[in-house]
Image (cartoon, rainbow, N blue to C red; front, top):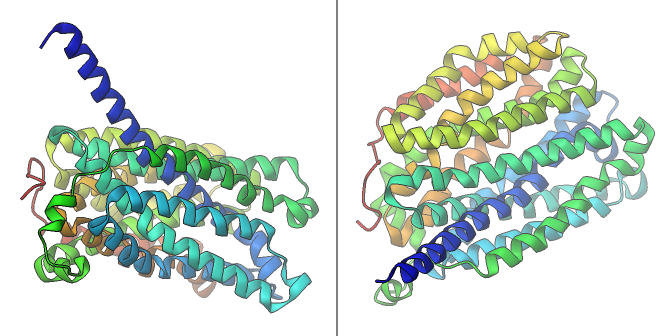
Length: 432
Protein backbone atom coordinates (compact mmCIF):
# COMPACT_ATOMS: atom_id res chain seq x y z
CA UNK A 1 0.00 0.00 0.00
CA UNK A 2 1.35 3.46 -0.92
CA UNK A 3 2.15 6.06 1.68
CA UNK A 4 -0.72 8.27 0.49
CA UNK A 5 -3.16 5.36 0.70
CA UNK A 6 -1.92 4.52 4.19
CA UNK A 7 -2.42 8.13 5.28
CA UNK A 8 -5.94 8.21 3.83
CA UNK A 9 -6.75 4.93 5.55
CA UNK A 10 -5.35 6.21 8.85
CA UNK A 11 -7.39 9.43 8.57
CA UNK A 12 -10.54 7.44 7.82
CA UNK A 13 -9.92 5.18 10.82
CA UNK A 14 -9.28 8.17 13.07
CA UNK A 15 -12.43 9.88 11.82
CA UNK A 16 -14.48 6.73 12.47
CA UNK A 17 -13.12 6.38 16.01
CA UNK A 18 -13.81 10.07 16.70
CA UNK A 19 -17.40 9.72 15.53
CA UNK A 20 -17.86 6.56 17.61
CA UNK A 21 -16.59 8.35 20.73
CA UNK A 22 -18.75 11.39 19.97
CA UNK A 23 -21.85 9.20 19.56
CA UNK A 24 -21.37 7.60 22.96
CA UNK A 25 -20.41 10.90 24.55
CA UNK A 26 -23.09 13.31 23.29
CA UNK A 27 -26.07 11.06 23.97
CA UNK A 28 -25.06 10.56 27.55
CA UNK A 29 -24.66 14.30 28.04
CA UNK A 30 -28.31 14.76 27.10
CA UNK A 31 -29.61 11.73 28.99
CA UNK A 32 -27.87 12.52 32.25
CA UNK A 33 -28.28 16.27 32.08
CA UNK A 34 -32.03 15.82 31.78
CA UNK A 35 -32.24 13.08 34.37
CA UNK A 36 -29.96 14.73 36.95
CA UNK A 37 -31.20 18.30 36.73
CA UNK A 38 -34.34 17.09 38.49
CA UNK A 39 -32.21 16.16 41.50
CA UNK A 40 -30.61 19.59 41.69
CA UNK A 41 -34.01 21.33 41.68
CA UNK A 42 -35.70 18.77 43.95
CA UNK A 43 -36.39 21.23 46.82
CA UNK A 44 -38.17 23.62 44.44
CA UNK A 45 -40.00 20.81 42.65
CA UNK A 46 -41.03 19.39 46.02
CA UNK A 47 -42.68 22.67 47.02
CA UNK A 48 -44.41 23.11 43.65
CA UNK A 49 -45.57 19.56 42.92
CA UNK A 50 -45.53 17.77 46.30
CA UNK A 51 -46.42 20.48 48.83
CA UNK A 52 -46.41 19.56 52.53
CA UNK A 53 -46.29 21.41 55.83
CA UNK A 54 -42.85 19.94 56.60
CA UNK A 55 -40.17 20.91 54.05
CA UNK A 56 -38.28 17.64 54.60
CA UNK A 57 -41.42 15.61 53.91
CA UNK A 58 -41.91 17.54 50.68
CA UNK A 59 -38.27 16.90 49.74
CA UNK A 60 -38.60 13.17 50.43
CA UNK A 61 -41.70 13.08 48.20
CA UNK A 62 -39.80 14.85 45.42
CA UNK A 63 -36.96 12.35 45.68
CA UNK A 64 -39.62 9.61 45.64
CA UNK A 65 -40.60 10.78 42.15
CA UNK A 66 -36.89 10.76 41.30
CA UNK A 67 -36.79 7.12 42.42
CA UNK A 68 -39.85 6.29 40.31
CA UNK A 69 -37.83 7.05 37.19
CA UNK A 70 -35.20 4.59 38.30
CA UNK A 71 -37.75 1.86 38.89
CA UNK A 72 -38.50 1.98 35.16
CA UNK A 73 -34.87 1.46 34.19
CA UNK A 74 -35.19 -2.35 34.08
CA UNK A 75 -38.06 -1.89 31.60
CA UNK A 76 -35.74 0.20 29.45
CA UNK A 77 -33.03 -2.41 29.90
CA UNK A 78 -35.29 -5.15 28.53
CA UNK A 79 -36.68 -3.01 25.70
CA UNK A 80 -33.46 -1.45 24.46
CA UNK A 81 -31.45 -4.58 25.25
CA UNK A 82 -33.68 -6.51 22.84
CA UNK A 83 -33.37 -3.77 20.20
CA UNK A 84 -29.60 -3.58 20.63
CA UNK A 85 -29.06 -7.35 20.45
CA UNK A 86 -31.58 -8.16 17.71
CA UNK A 87 -31.71 -5.03 15.53
CA UNK A 88 -28.49 -3.18 16.29
CA UNK A 89 -26.72 -0.91 18.76
CA UNK A 90 -27.23 2.12 16.51
CA UNK A 91 -31.02 1.82 16.50
CA UNK A 92 -31.13 1.53 20.29
CA UNK A 93 -28.92 4.60 20.73
CA UNK A 94 -30.93 6.72 18.29
CA UNK A 95 -34.29 5.83 19.83
CA UNK A 96 -33.15 6.37 23.41
CA UNK A 97 -31.92 9.91 22.84
CA UNK A 98 -35.26 10.97 21.31
CA UNK A 99 -37.26 9.19 24.00
CA UNK A 100 -35.58 11.37 26.63
CA UNK A 101 -36.10 14.66 24.78
CA UNK A 102 -39.91 14.68 24.68
CA UNK A 103 -40.67 14.10 28.40
CA UNK A 104 -37.92 16.54 29.32
CA UNK A 105 -39.62 19.29 27.36
CA UNK A 106 -42.99 18.38 28.91
CA UNK A 107 -41.56 18.59 32.45
CA UNK A 108 -40.52 22.16 31.66
CA UNK A 109 -44.08 22.97 30.57
CA UNK A 110 -45.93 21.10 33.32
CA UNK A 111 -48.52 23.02 35.43
CA UNK A 112 -47.87 22.97 39.18
CA UNK A 113 -49.94 21.66 42.09
CA UNK A 114 -51.35 25.14 42.67
CA UNK A 115 -52.72 25.13 39.12
CA UNK A 116 -54.11 21.61 38.60
CA UNK A 117 -53.87 19.96 42.02
CA UNK A 118 -52.81 16.34 42.51
CA UNK A 119 -52.74 15.83 38.73
CA UNK A 120 -49.48 17.79 38.65
CA UNK A 121 -47.75 15.25 40.90
CA UNK A 122 -49.15 12.32 38.91
CA UNK A 123 -48.00 13.78 35.59
CA UNK A 124 -44.56 14.54 36.99
CA UNK A 125 -44.16 10.93 38.14
CA UNK A 126 -45.35 9.59 34.77
CA UNK A 127 -42.86 11.76 32.87
CA UNK A 128 -40.06 10.68 35.22
CA UNK A 129 -40.99 7.06 34.52
CA UNK A 130 -40.74 7.60 30.75
CA UNK A 131 -37.34 9.20 31.25
CA UNK A 132 -36.36 6.18 33.32
CA UNK A 133 -37.18 3.82 30.45
CA UNK A 134 -34.94 5.87 28.17
CA UNK A 135 -32.02 6.00 30.60
CA UNK A 136 -32.37 2.25 31.20
CA UNK A 137 -31.42 1.65 27.57
CA UNK A 138 -29.08 4.54 26.91
CA UNK A 139 -26.07 4.12 29.14
CA UNK A 140 -25.47 0.40 28.73
CA UNK A 141 -26.16 0.46 24.98
CA UNK A 142 -23.63 3.25 24.59
CA UNK A 143 -20.80 1.67 26.57
CA UNK A 144 -21.29 -1.72 24.89
CA UNK A 145 -21.16 0.08 21.54
CA UNK A 146 -17.97 1.93 22.54
CA UNK A 147 -16.15 -1.10 23.92
CA UNK A 148 -17.02 -3.21 20.86
CA UNK A 149 -15.55 -0.57 18.54
CA UNK A 150 -12.40 -0.05 20.64
CA UNK A 151 -8.92 -1.46 19.98
CA UNK A 152 -8.41 -4.47 22.33
CA UNK A 153 -5.82 -2.64 24.45
CA UNK A 154 -8.00 0.49 24.89
CA UNK A 155 -11.43 -0.93 25.74
CA UNK A 156 -11.63 0.59 29.22
CA UNK A 157 -10.66 4.01 27.84
CA UNK A 158 -13.25 3.87 25.04
CA UNK A 159 -15.95 2.53 27.39
CA UNK A 160 -15.19 5.27 29.90
CA UNK A 161 -16.40 7.90 27.43
CA UNK A 162 -19.96 6.88 28.21
CA UNK A 163 -19.25 7.75 31.83
CA UNK A 164 -17.44 10.94 30.82
CA UNK A 165 -20.54 11.93 28.84
CA UNK A 166 -22.73 11.14 31.84
CA UNK A 167 -20.57 13.21 34.20
CA UNK A 168 -20.44 16.06 31.70
CA UNK A 169 -24.23 15.94 31.49
CA UNK A 170 -24.58 16.11 35.26
CA UNK A 171 -21.84 18.74 35.34
CA UNK A 172 -23.78 20.78 32.80
CA UNK A 173 -26.95 20.39 34.85
CA UNK A 174 -25.12 21.48 37.98
CA UNK A 175 -23.58 24.47 36.20
CA UNK A 176 -26.94 25.55 34.75
CA UNK A 177 -28.48 25.12 38.19
CA UNK A 178 -25.79 27.27 39.79
CA UNK A 179 -26.21 29.92 37.09
CA UNK A 180 -29.98 30.09 37.48
CA UNK A 181 -29.75 30.20 41.28
CA UNK A 182 -27.24 33.04 41.02
CA UNK A 183 -29.37 35.22 38.73
CA UNK A 184 -32.88 34.61 40.08
CA UNK A 185 -34.58 35.42 43.33
CA UNK A 186 -36.42 32.71 45.27
CA UNK A 187 -39.73 33.99 43.88
CA UNK A 188 -38.42 33.98 40.29
CA UNK A 189 -36.93 30.52 40.74
CA UNK A 190 -40.24 29.05 41.89
CA UNK A 191 -42.23 30.98 39.30
CA UNK A 192 -40.29 30.18 36.12
CA UNK A 193 -36.56 29.77 36.75
CA UNK A 194 -36.72 26.03 37.48
CA UNK A 195 -38.28 25.39 34.04
CA UNK A 196 -35.33 26.73 32.03
CA UNK A 197 -32.97 23.71 32.48
CA UNK A 198 -35.64 21.27 31.29
CA UNK A 199 -36.57 23.33 28.22
CA UNK A 200 -32.92 24.02 27.31
CA UNK A 201 -32.02 20.31 27.45
CA UNK A 202 -34.17 19.61 24.39
CA UNK A 203 -31.68 21.47 22.19
CA UNK A 204 -29.00 18.86 22.88
CA UNK A 205 -31.31 16.12 21.57
CA UNK A 206 -31.07 17.32 17.98
CA UNK A 207 -27.26 17.33 18.09
CA UNK A 208 -27.24 13.84 19.58
CA UNK A 209 -29.71 12.50 17.03
CA UNK A 210 -27.77 13.73 13.99
CA UNK A 211 -24.44 12.45 15.33
CA UNK A 212 -25.87 9.02 16.11
CA UNK A 213 -27.81 8.77 12.85
CA UNK A 214 -24.55 8.48 10.91
CA UNK A 215 -22.51 6.21 13.17
CA UNK A 216 -21.32 2.75 12.05
CA UNK A 217 -23.09 -0.23 13.61
CA UNK A 218 -21.50 -3.46 14.76
CA UNK A 219 -22.05 -6.04 11.96
CA UNK A 220 -24.42 -8.48 13.64
CA UNK A 221 -26.94 -9.12 10.88
CA UNK A 222 -25.39 -12.28 9.43
CA UNK A 223 -24.71 -13.81 12.83
CA UNK A 224 -28.27 -13.19 14.00
CA UNK A 225 -29.82 -14.34 10.74
CA UNK A 226 -28.42 -17.82 11.37
CA UNK A 227 -30.00 -18.00 14.83
CA UNK A 228 -33.53 -19.08 15.59
CA UNK A 229 -35.73 -16.27 16.95
CA UNK A 230 -35.33 -16.11 20.71
CA UNK A 231 -35.29 -13.72 23.63
CA UNK A 232 -31.79 -12.33 24.25
CA UNK A 233 -32.71 -11.77 27.89
CA UNK A 234 -33.74 -15.41 28.33
CA UNK A 235 -30.55 -16.57 26.59
CA UNK A 236 -28.49 -14.24 28.78
CA UNK A 237 -30.02 -15.56 32.00
CA UNK A 238 -29.48 -19.14 30.85
CA UNK A 239 -25.85 -18.70 29.86
CA UNK A 240 -24.63 -15.80 32.02
CA UNK A 241 -26.62 -15.98 35.26
CA UNK A 242 -23.57 -15.78 37.52
CA UNK A 243 -22.03 -12.90 35.60
CA UNK A 244 -25.31 -10.95 35.64
CA UNK A 245 -25.55 -11.34 39.42
CA UNK A 246 -21.92 -10.29 39.81
CA UNK A 247 -22.53 -7.25 37.62
CA UNK A 248 -25.53 -6.30 39.73
CA UNK A 249 -23.51 -6.72 42.92
CA UNK A 250 -20.63 -4.47 41.91
CA UNK A 251 -23.07 -1.82 40.64
CA UNK A 252 -24.82 -1.58 44.02
CA UNK A 253 -21.91 0.52 45.24
CA UNK A 254 -21.72 2.42 41.96
CA UNK A 255 -25.40 3.39 42.19
CA UNK A 256 -25.56 4.38 45.85
CA UNK A 257 -22.27 6.29 45.92
CA UNK A 258 -22.82 8.22 42.71
CA UNK A 259 -26.35 9.40 43.44
CA UNK A 260 -25.70 10.17 47.08
CA UNK A 261 -22.51 12.13 46.46
CA UNK A 262 -23.35 14.00 43.26
CA UNK A 263 -27.13 14.39 43.52
CA UNK A 264 -28.18 14.35 47.20
CA UNK A 265 -25.20 16.07 48.83
CA UNK A 266 -25.86 19.37 47.05
CA UNK A 267 -29.24 19.42 48.84
CA UNK A 268 -27.65 18.09 52.07
CA UNK A 269 -25.22 21.01 52.10
CA UNK A 270 -28.13 23.45 52.02
CA UNK A 271 -30.50 21.67 54.41
CA UNK A 272 -28.03 20.26 56.96
CA UNK A 273 -24.82 22.31 56.71
CA UNK A 274 -26.44 25.67 55.99
CA UNK A 275 -24.63 26.56 52.78
CA UNK A 276 -26.37 28.69 50.16
CA UNK A 277 -27.85 26.77 47.22
CA UNK A 278 -25.61 28.65 44.77
CA UNK A 279 -22.49 27.73 46.76
CA UNK A 280 -23.56 24.08 47.12
CA UNK A 281 -24.04 23.82 43.36
CA UNK A 282 -20.68 25.52 42.76
CA UNK A 283 -19.01 22.86 44.91
CA UNK A 284 -20.88 20.11 43.10
CA UNK A 285 -19.89 21.55 39.73
CA UNK A 286 -16.20 21.64 40.67
CA UNK A 287 -16.26 18.09 42.04
CA UNK A 288 -18.01 16.82 38.90
CA UNK A 289 -15.36 18.55 36.80
CA UNK A 290 -12.71 16.73 38.84
CA UNK A 291 -14.56 13.43 38.30
CA UNK A 292 -14.58 14.06 34.55
CA UNK A 293 -10.78 14.35 34.65
CA UNK A 294 -10.23 11.35 36.94
CA UNK A 295 -12.43 8.85 35.03
CA UNK A 296 -10.27 8.63 31.86
CA UNK A 297 -7.14 8.41 34.01
CA UNK A 298 -8.65 5.48 35.90
CA UNK A 299 -9.68 3.88 32.59
CA UNK A 300 -6.14 4.14 31.24
CA UNK A 301 -4.87 2.46 34.42
CA UNK A 302 -7.54 -0.26 34.02
CA UNK A 303 -6.29 -0.92 30.48
CA UNK A 304 -2.74 -1.24 31.76
CA UNK A 305 -3.10 -3.05 35.09
CA UNK A 306 -6.49 -4.75 34.81
CA UNK A 307 -10.08 -4.01 35.80
CA UNK A 308 -10.19 -5.65 39.24
CA UNK A 309 -7.44 -3.58 40.92
CA UNK A 310 -9.30 -0.34 40.14
CA UNK A 311 -12.67 -1.77 41.20
CA UNK A 312 -11.24 -3.03 44.49
CA UNK A 313 -9.45 0.23 45.27
CA UNK A 314 -12.61 2.27 44.63
CA UNK A 315 -14.93 0.06 46.67
CA UNK A 316 -12.47 -0.31 49.58
CA UNK A 317 -11.92 3.45 49.60
CA UNK A 318 -15.64 4.21 49.82
CA UNK A 319 -16.11 1.60 52.55
CA UNK A 320 -13.26 2.95 54.68
CA UNK A 321 -13.21 6.70 54.06
CA UNK A 322 -16.90 7.68 53.68
CA UNK A 323 -17.34 8.75 57.35
CA UNK A 324 -14.18 10.87 57.29
CA UNK A 325 -14.97 12.49 53.94
CA UNK A 326 -18.54 13.33 54.95
CA UNK A 327 -17.34 14.76 58.26
CA UNK A 328 -14.90 16.91 56.30
CA UNK A 329 -17.84 18.29 54.32
CA UNK A 330 -19.84 19.11 57.47
CA UNK A 331 -18.21 22.54 57.91
CA UNK A 332 -18.94 26.13 56.88
CA UNK A 333 -15.73 26.16 54.86
CA UNK A 334 -15.77 26.07 51.07
CA UNK A 335 -12.30 24.53 50.80
CA UNK A 336 -12.98 21.69 53.27
CA UNK A 337 -16.31 20.84 51.68
CA UNK A 338 -14.74 20.79 48.21
CA UNK A 339 -11.84 18.64 49.43
CA UNK A 340 -14.27 16.09 50.86
CA UNK A 341 -16.35 15.87 47.71
CA UNK A 342 -13.28 15.64 45.46
CA UNK A 343 -12.08 12.81 47.69
CA UNK A 344 -15.32 11.01 46.87
CA UNK A 345 -14.79 11.87 43.17
CA UNK A 346 -11.40 10.12 43.13
CA UNK A 347 -12.88 6.94 44.61
CA UNK A 348 -15.92 6.99 42.30
CA UNK A 349 -13.62 7.43 39.30
CA UNK A 350 -11.66 4.28 40.19
CA UNK A 351 -14.63 1.99 39.64
CA UNK A 352 -16.45 4.19 37.10
CA UNK A 353 -13.46 4.05 34.75
CA UNK A 354 -13.31 0.25 34.86
CA UNK A 355 -16.98 -0.82 35.03
CA UNK A 356 -18.03 -0.31 31.36
CA UNK A 357 -15.26 -2.53 30.00
CA UNK A 358 -15.68 -5.08 32.80
CA UNK A 359 -19.41 -5.54 32.22
CA UNK A 360 -19.09 -5.67 28.44
CA UNK A 361 -16.31 -8.26 28.58
CA UNK A 362 -18.29 -10.53 30.90
CA UNK A 363 -20.89 -11.42 28.22
CA UNK A 364 -20.95 -12.90 24.72
CA UNK A 365 -21.94 -10.84 21.72
CA UNK A 366 -25.47 -12.10 20.96
CA UNK A 367 -26.85 -11.25 24.42
CA UNK A 368 -24.37 -8.58 25.52
CA UNK A 369 -26.62 -5.51 25.55
CA UNK A 370 -29.47 -7.31 27.33
CA UNK A 371 -27.22 -8.93 29.93
CA UNK A 372 -25.24 -5.75 30.57
CA UNK A 373 -28.42 -3.65 30.77
CA UNK A 374 -30.11 -5.89 33.32
CA UNK A 375 -26.96 -6.36 35.42
CA UNK A 376 -26.46 -2.61 35.47
CA UNK A 377 -30.00 -1.25 35.75
CA UNK A 378 -31.50 -3.55 38.41
CA UNK A 379 -29.18 -2.26 41.17
CA UNK A 380 -29.62 1.31 39.92
CA UNK A 381 -33.40 0.90 40.08
CA UNK A 382 -33.31 -0.54 43.58
CA UNK A 383 -30.37 1.32 45.14
CA UNK A 384 -29.48 4.28 42.89
CA UNK A 385 -32.88 5.89 42.46
CA UNK A 386 -33.70 5.46 46.13
CA UNK A 387 -30.31 6.66 47.40
CA UNK A 388 -31.27 10.36 47.80
CA UNK A 389 -34.60 9.39 49.40
CA UNK A 390 -32.92 6.92 51.78
CA UNK A 391 -30.26 9.50 52.65
CA UNK A 392 -32.89 12.16 53.39
CA UNK A 393 -34.86 9.65 55.48
CA UNK A 394 -31.77 8.58 57.46
CA UNK A 395 -30.97 12.17 58.35
CA UNK A 396 -34.56 12.83 59.44
CA UNK A 397 -34.98 9.54 61.35
CA UNK A 398 -31.68 9.70 63.25
CA UNK A 399 -31.29 13.45 63.56
CA UNK A 400 -27.65 12.87 62.57
CA UNK A 401 -26.52 14.55 59.32
CA UNK A 402 -23.59 12.10 59.09
CA UNK A 403 -25.72 8.93 59.27
CA UNK A 404 -25.62 8.48 55.49
CA UNK A 405 -21.88 7.70 55.66
CA UNK A 406 -22.62 4.29 57.17
CA UNK A 407 -25.01 3.47 54.35
CA UNK A 408 -22.29 4.31 51.83
CA UNK A 409 -19.71 2.23 53.70
CA UNK A 410 -22.00 -0.79 54.13
CA UNK A 411 -23.01 -0.98 50.47
CA UNK A 412 -19.39 -0.51 49.33
CA UNK A 413 -18.23 -3.34 51.61
CA UNK A 414 -20.78 -5.71 50.06
CA UNK A 415 -19.68 -4.76 46.54
CA UNK A 416 -16.02 -5.21 47.51
CA UNK A 417 -16.71 -8.83 48.47
CA UNK A 418 -18.57 -9.46 45.21
CA UNK A 419 -15.77 -7.93 43.12
CA UNK A 420 -13.38 -10.47 44.63
CA UNK A 421 -15.40 -13.22 42.89
CA UNK A 422 -15.30 -11.64 39.42
CA UNK A 423 -12.73 -12.90 36.93
CA UNK A 424 -10.24 -10.46 35.45
CA UNK A 425 -11.47 -9.65 31.92
CA UNK A 426 -8.54 -7.58 30.63
CA UNK A 427 -7.30 -9.03 27.33
CA UNK A 428 -10.24 -11.42 26.80
CA UNK A 429 -11.77 -11.89 23.33
CA UNK A 430 -15.11 -10.21 22.69
CA UNK A 431 -15.92 -12.80 20.01
CA UNK A 432 -15.82 -15.83 22.31
